[in-house]
Image 1 (cartoon, rainbow, N blue to C red):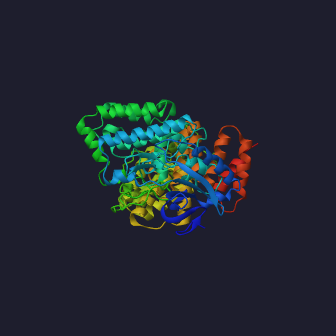
Image 2 (cartoon, rainbow, N blue to C red):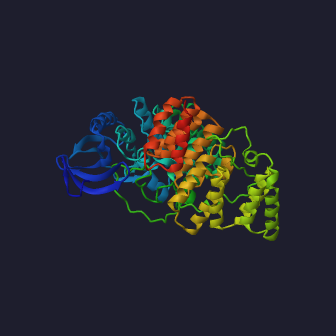
Image 3 (tube, rainbow, N blue to C red):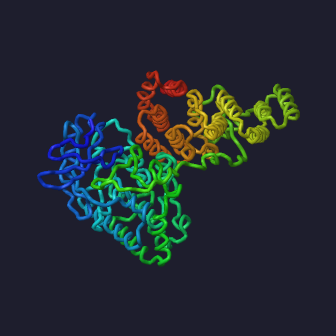
Length: 585
């Protein structure tokens, strides 16, 4: 049971709840013997599902509690009450940096002061082998007396010391500030992960918004791992050349290319900050003080409020809640419907041959494989299909029939042309795209099926329709199977468009990367989504597929047998698992 207001926990009387997040709940409490207020941070009950968690919690908390620095919120005590572990921290009157940026902003000199304080706190901790792992503005406290504190030091590490059933995105760190290596679930983290997260804060202070922000944590995490950093000067022309260089280095995907330590990064930032023209400094400070714009609001966070549970966010320890002006939720995406509106110049179909292999040969042209050798016996059908198009030139279904008629006689160019025409004529006809997707899926033409299904999903989302489970399953299969083709990223927007489960698009993207870019990167991408969302049968299937492709078929056998034994696994996954299992000598 959670602590309640008025309850006595050890020597502390609970006065009020100050905040709640995915990892913990924060209470203001009073210690009568010492006549002082403290902040109690109580970890989520799900951590207790691991019987060894308390011992690890105490070990990690003891390490963090040894940090003694004027810019780090001190931990006074750690204990457990009725089986629930909690930390006792200094109670600080003030507000978070995030709240200040949204409400009033920071003057140029205040930016430098905050950056300096955070840098000193991190440098001190890093020298003692302690990482923060969750640097973000809501973990920076601006006390009423002018002091700047870094809160929640090592809390992510304490949480990760347990093997709870909490979803991983609760204990990862906040998506907008997470480093690529932390997003991928790497275990060999070093101070470079804090340098990256701190670098995101510096980007936000100098540019006026975080570099990556989207509708879902999965999209943001994907961007941190793979997408190029949005150039600061393109986002905000007032950013100087020197500042842009600092931010590019701090936010390098490869941690070896970042600053070697926090001190070096802070010195470089302060130098560039001071050299920026006065007008640019003023503009930079003003940008972050403006009411939050859609592009500035991270997914999973409400403007003017602390991050909520489920986005990896935590309430800052030691801060009382302050009145905030209410700002509408403006982060909801408005551009989703434009994702697939571009005109496709060509399209590819996968072989309709029933004896095809699990995945296509990369050197083969999928469309040519579909059309195959010309079959003179199909000529009559082609002429009939052409006549129907002459009679009904604006009917997308008639055009689709002609696609298959051209494919039957081996006319690649004609099939491509008619497919594009059918797609355009389909307009907003949801039923046409669903039916077309199923027709291609029946022929195992996965790239075409995925394209049609994705368009249908776009239209369903615009119409506010509910997606039924059979259709959802069909889309998952098509997107997964289509991901192996080099053209897949032209037709399937993966994590950029998420009408269904965003994790499924990340699985497909990992498959695409493995087969078309780099096997190691594909494996890393798969590990990232496995770390983010446990229990996906698609990830188990893809892991087995990767293992087999790498020549370790015997290691894949247990995974495949497990998939086949589970009743909840979709039939298409079982079919692929069975096919792979039967191919093992």
